[in-house]
Image 1 (cartoon, helix red, strand yellow):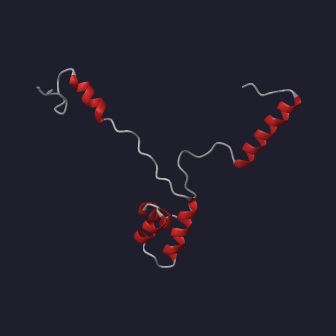
Image 2 (image 1 turned 90 degrees about the horizontal axis):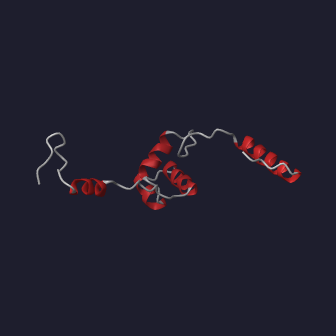
Image 3 (image 1 turned 180 degrees about the vertical axis):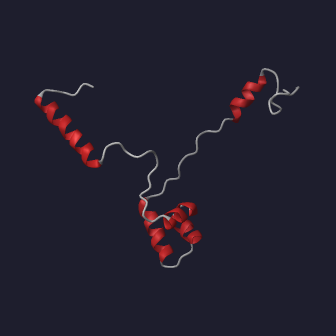
Length: 108
């Protein structure tokens, strides 16, 4: 099949769209490891264990351990920062529950 001159990686014809759709990658799944394992691995590193060995022992990616040792003061969680503090969120929930019990449910 002839290739398109404007896009040399694409073939002309009806199969070209199917090939493009097949090449789409699914989003990466985040690795699951507990905060406890990170803490244990960091303690082991502080006691002299290598990052590579701590990574294998506790099942935490080596790059994650490197980041946490280089930035110990950061409390990292995925995604953007929260809009409400934990206290504000708790107050809002309590206000909604209180008004609901009084017969004034929050509609919007």
